Length: 482
Image (cartoon, rainbow, N blue to C red):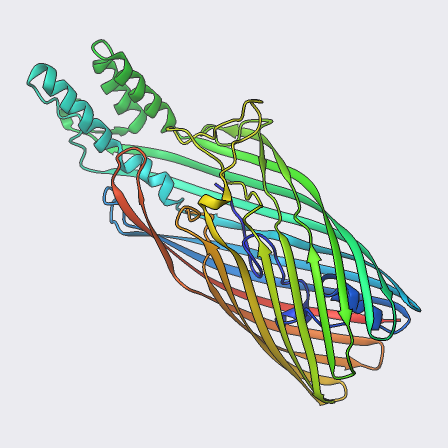
C-alpha cells in the first residue's frame, strides 16, 4: 500500500508551490519570483538584482472510505482518516544580471504530509471478518469425510483494534539558468534533485472471535484458529498449515517500515513576452526515475522486506499558460498542466495469493504493474484566474481549476486512489514599497466521489468501495526584491 498525499497537481506531482499560487491557481505564465518553479524562462523579465520568495502552506485533508463487504460488522462501514501538512514550505532565490538569471529553489514536489486512520482500513478488517468463511470450508470438508459438521464456523461476532499512519515526502532542490535572447524571447534550463522518504506504521491488536461455547467461547483469533488447526492437521496437513498460518498472521501483527530513494529531473522552459499585454510561458519537466529501498523495524505482514526495491517515479510534465493585461489594473491568466503518467511507475506491484509482493529474478526488486492496466489516459488540469489591483499596492485575486485523472478501477485502493477535482481559490496581495510583497490565499478542493467493485481474495465475495476527500489550504508568503 502507498500513502501518496496529493494536495495540488497530478497523481504524484504537487503543483501548489507558492502563496501566490494559493490565491490564483494559475502561475504558468507569471514572471514573479515563484517563476523559478512555474515558469523558469519568465525570470528573464525580472529587474536586475537579488530576488527572494518564502512561503508556507498549511494543508488539511479528510478522507472517507466506505466498504460494503458483507462480512464486516455493520457493513457498509465508513473508515475516516485525516491527512495534514501543517508546514508546507517553498523557497526561491533569483540573481538577475542583465540577460542572465541564476535561480535556485526548494519545494516539496510530491507528498508532504501524513495520513492517519485511527480505526485502520477496510483491508485490515476484511481479514478478520472473513475467518468464518474460511472455517466454513473446513466444516464442509470435515462433513464430507465424517458426515458430521463440527460447526467451527459458527462464530457470532468479532472485535479488533486497528491503526495505520503513513507519511510520504518528495523533497526537491532545484537550480537553473535563464537567458534572454531578446526582449521577446527567453529560455531556461535546469534540474531538480528529488529525495524521497515514505514511512508506514500500523498494527492489528486485541483480535477476538466469539467462537462456539463448545470450543471455549470468546477467545483470541490466534488461539481459536490454532485449536481448529490442531484438530484438522492429523487428517489434512495442508488445511492445518493454512489455519496455522492465518493464526500467526492475526497474532497482533505490527508494521514499522520506511522507503528511501532519489532521482534527477531535467527541466527546460520558454517564455514569449509578445507585448506588455500578453505573456506566454511554457515548461517541460522530464520523467524522473526513482527507485526506493525498503527498511523496517518490524514487518509482520511481509509488505516491506528489508533491502527490497520498488519504483516511485515522478512523471514527465508539460505546462503552459497565457497571462493577459487588458488594462493596467487587471490581469487574467489561463494555464494547463499535462502529466505523462503512463510511462511512470507509481509503486504498484504484483502480489501473490497471500498478498505479498512478488520479487523479480534478482530477488530484491518488486515486479511492477504495467501502468496500462491501471491508467487509461494521462492526467491533466486547466485553470483560470483574475487579479485586480484596488490600488498600486493592494490587489485581490481568485481562481478556478479542474483536474481529470485517467485512472481506471484497477488503480483505486484504500490509500492510493485518485478522484476528479474542482478547485477554487482567492486571496490578496499587499505591496510594501518597491521591495516587499505579501501574498495570502485560501484554497478549497472539491472532489467527485468515486467507487469501485472488487472481489475479496480469500472468499471471492464481491463488495463496493467508495472514496471521498475534502481539502483546505491556507497560505502566506513574502517576496523580497533587493
